[in-house]
Image (cartoon, rainbow, N blue to C red):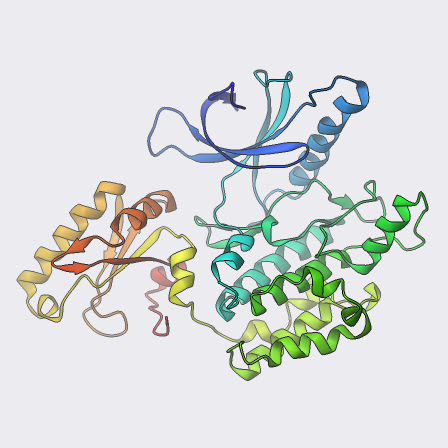
Length: 411
């Protein structure tokens, strides 16, 4: 898309800002609607025409485009599935006209969250949040008869505007009982029955066992185990030890001294993961049933690292107000006015909250109209000096802010 800094889609002009990723048949770009600095952002997935001409080569990207478009149109409207805004043709592609999907722009992926967790594992709050959101999406798409067939950390992204995780990339998805792609799922997240099917397909043979929606639960089980342990498990799940006794390996991970979590919630999570990782797909828990796990009845608070990594429209400023400022009404109002003035440089401020008592005493909560403004403010305010102190800026859940709920356990 290098030759097309501007795209026309859905009757509007969009500026191509950056490439977000690329694969064998498609590339993804961040785009902004032209004419307004606060205009909406989007993501364009361009199905790249092959450099070599020929009927078979031309069919591949068109097939991938049609397949993903059909799935996203059928699954449109669920909050945990990426939103398709529309489709269009880019007539300025280097190899000829290319088909494109215009999608909502999402934020950080679970793959990136795992990378930033530095092998320590994710918080129970984040694991629970991700597990519930993905299971809600799977329950919906399985009810519609679809199998995602490529669930992995890179295909689960955070939505800053809606404060939830969403599934992306339906290029390998299929209707259950009507599988048209033999090679499904990514190595390391591939269910045993899919592994067998892929091996037989390479040998030109047909598998007697069809892959079902259960393959998605297997993938999610591995993802949650990686989030808990902070370790990539690709080699573990391919080992003979795993094939012999995966349950013992899961027990060992949860008993590890390096994993610090309270016992009862960890055991609930362990049992949930085990229910997803049965070798026999008929015994694997369904998405709908998994949502009834006692793991989801336990309230967790986010860690401060969660609030730094997961953007929301609400910014929380620490180390800004002193006790003296809180006690003097005049000084308190002056400082608030200074903070509001500074924060408005990054976008319209919808509301502000500065508690004078615990919880949240002295913290400054700034609600922006959208997460884009909040992200810009967080990036530029972190580390700034204010009244002789270094500012620490994190995000804060909009839903909790709206309810007036201030988490006390953050570290």
